[in-house]
Every structure is written in C-alpha cells, then in structure tokens.
Length: 111
Figure 1 (cartoon, rainbow, N blue to C red):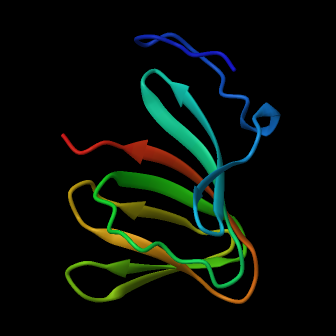
Figure 2 (tube, rainbow, N blue to C red):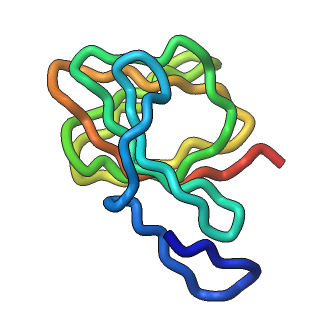
C-alpha cells in the first residue's frame, strides 16, 4: 500500500490487504490515502450494525444490496452497481439482506 501526502498521486492496494473484523459478521480491507480511509467492506447475510455511524461515506455496492437505516427516520436502499452518499454528521447504520454484500467506501470524516 502506498500512502500519498498532500495532492500527490497515490495508490491504495486494497486487494493485497487481509480481511479484518469490524463488527460481528462485518469484515473489511482498509487502507489510507492522504489521511482518508478507503475500504472494501463485506457484510455476511443478515449482518447489521448495532451502533450509529456519523462519518460520511461515498460508496459503491460491488455485490449484493445494502440498506441504511437513517437516524432521523427512513431508509436508503442501495442495489448492486449503484453509488451512494451518506453525509457526515447524519447517523446511519448498515443492514444487510439474505446474501453477502460487498461495498467500496471512501470515508468523509465529520468536520
């Protein structure tokens, strides 16, 4: 993995990283580029987050389908092949369905 600084080009070799457990039934490969977390996240069938996340995420569903419960009420459903935006400062938590789901995420920290 190469980590860049400032506005220099850089590469995050996520496929070369080992899977690490984030939560029960949720694993990730995480790298950092220019101080920003980049990750491939894998949700097992039926996996869900127990806590609210307030970091923002730019994401893309590589495989499966993910639903985000929104702390203010409502849901954001994201099918395979779709990109999504979860703004920083708004609580959300992922809930997975009947099949494994993989996401690509670039985090946007709360300012």
